[in-house]
Structures are given as C-alpha cells and as structure tokens.
Length: 336
Image (cartoon, rainbow, N blue to C red):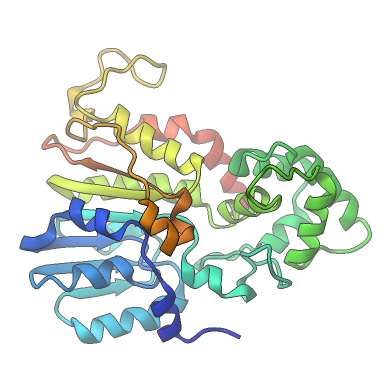
C-alpha cells in the first residue's frame, strides 16, 4: 500500500542534515537551490530561518504534494519545479549562495515498492525516477548482451556483469523478464554466494539499471556544471553521493578545477587558462555520517559529502570533465 505524503515526510531523514546546515552557514539567510527535493528535508530546515529563499527541483511528480505544502506555508520564499536538475538553468534568473545535490534514490521512491527499485519486492521492473520514458523492464528484455554487460560493469562495478548478461539473454529466449524477483533469481544464479559480504548480491546490478534508466551520470555532470555557473563568488556547491562512481566524478571536478591544484594528466594542457579554476582552494575532504546518525538512519552509511566554494573568476565551461567521463555518458545515450 502506498504511504500518504504525511507518512513519507515523517519517515524521511535527510542525510547529514547538520553538516549541510553548517556548510550553508545560513543564519543570515540567503538564496538556496535544492536540486533533489525528495521529501523536502533540507528545504524544510532551511526555510525555518527567516531570511532564506529556496528554489527546489525534483523530476519525480509524486513529491509535488509535499512541495505544495511548503509553498502554502512559505509562499514568498519557496518555489518548486518538477524538472530534472540538468535543466536548472531554465528556471533561474539570479545567482545563488548555495546549491545542494543529494544524489541517488530518494526515500519517497524507495519506500514505494511498486516502482521496482527494491530487490526485496515482487513488482514490475520500472525504476524510473520520473520524466523518463524508459523502464528497467524494457532494458532487460530488449538490449543486447554486450550492452547489458557494459551497463552492469560500468554503472554497477559488478564483477559478474558478463555472466549476468549472458543468463538474462538465455532466460528471455523462453519468456520475458517482468518483475524484480525474476531478475533477482537470475542474478543469484549468476553469482557465487559470498557470506562475508554485507550487501545483497543484487545491489550492484539494480544500481546499474537504475543509473542507466535515469541517465544519472549525464544528469550529475550537467547538473554540477550548471550549478557552478549560477553560484555567486564564495557560493557553495554541496554534493552528497552514495556510490563510488558518483563520488569519483565529484572529486575529479572539485579537485581539478580548484585554484590550489596542479594538473598533470592528459585532460589538461599545461598552459590551461587560469580562468578554468572555478573553485577556491579545495581541501579534498570527504565528510561522512556520524556514528550517532548511522544508528538513527542506516541509509546514511554509504553517503559521502563533498563541497567546494566558487571562486571569483568568470565561468568557463569545464570540457575536461565531460571528456573524462564521456565513455559513461555515451553509453547512457542508448537509453534515449
């Protein structure tokens, strides 16, 4: 049974909320963008401070009801758009003090088992976060073996990607694969049980499918680039990620486009213009959840928070970021 919005809001615990609020340093107010509104955890807390204004985005139409409640409560300080954050430039006409990304699947999406995100259910393979015409069911039943292998390998870092893809092709010769439990059974047959591992054997494959269906890598890259463009000098870009691939992208961006970093790789020519240093001295520090938070909110265990501070140089498009991860965005284009 689908939970009402009130229950979803009550259950939602925004990850590392105190750390985000401390980084925002919003006691004196400011203009914020919440790029992944979800159940509204960050927006709700920031709006408790009198001088704050927030523009929030989410591609999932099922959170519109939650956003409407905040809009009714703070009509002059809160605005919501049902859009992908890669399109954030379509809704802004001003510079922001802070932009926040809380990546991955939201509590609203995960708690609704009918959407097919969870491997602990028996529902149709969907996995769409919204504003997407593709489903995981379509991918599993129509993509060729090489593409499936690459999806599992590149987006899920799944060691048994080849075997899983091969068994999917074998299974669908006899019947279509329609539900989450059917896919779980195929994955189980493809992998040896490892009793030492703490994560479910289906975790990586399900993650990979979700990323591909929703073009999450392309979304992330375009989102953080456009967010940088709308930040004020001294503004903060906060990104919370939940798997190593996301964190790798964020780390590369913050580190290589910071004023205190030397570059010695093929993506950056030696005479690179200093205007490409979009951030002030980046400390390359990862913030993780406290032991106290882990007890209250187990979902925070894999969360990594990084933030960077915008420099005062004129924005220059970070082409090198796109080049570095082009092999991933090219694969995602097959989902279009």
